[in-house]
Length: 261
Image (cartoon, rainbow, N blue to C red; front, side, top):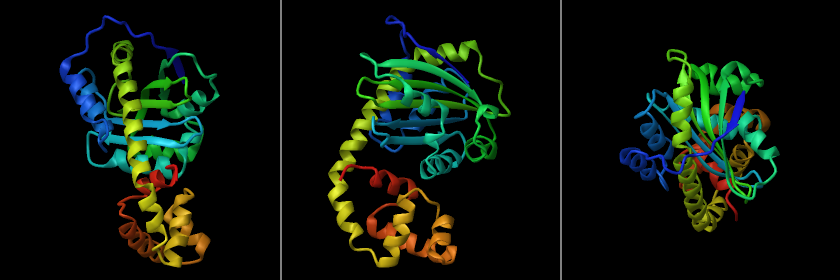
């Protein structure tokens, strides 16, 4: 795992199409897709993930996209549900840094075989055929930690100097877009938090039990084991509860759970 500071050149011009791609994703569920499209204009990458937490570790933003299917989105849901951010070398390293007077940017590079935890390595690298990632890392004076990462598959060549230079040139744009996106998502969650809380009260006792386990970061299988019921039973209560709560995925539930009430 390697990291180095980025000092963006003030006079570096970024193509208008790339700026437009990135800005189009702010405040939408598709920020990672916008960043992926933007960077694919300058280098080959397969996945993109965008992750931001505040100074307390509360998740502010999470987005994922891939060049094929919904693989990245499903991987991101596992990342959030199992709190792999606590094991993620990028996020853990940023958490140990002293808060800067001014926002600081780094570039990070990590190969799959450098991920120590086997469950995290399997879920985010091995199971989806990822070789490595290159990341833009941001730490703000307020303690916000941001990682915008681009991934290459086993079928692609490794990242090289030209790729890292391209990432560095676009680092400020990517980081600032993520910060703006995080602010918009927090504002949106705060606006709906009272509605979400009131909807929780409409759930049945068993539905609240299932949702409680899921909000604690457990999988449906783990919730079934804790409750002593079949997985199919948990799934039934889960999807009924999701309909009543107005959400569609475990990721949305976790984002609501970490929103200020």
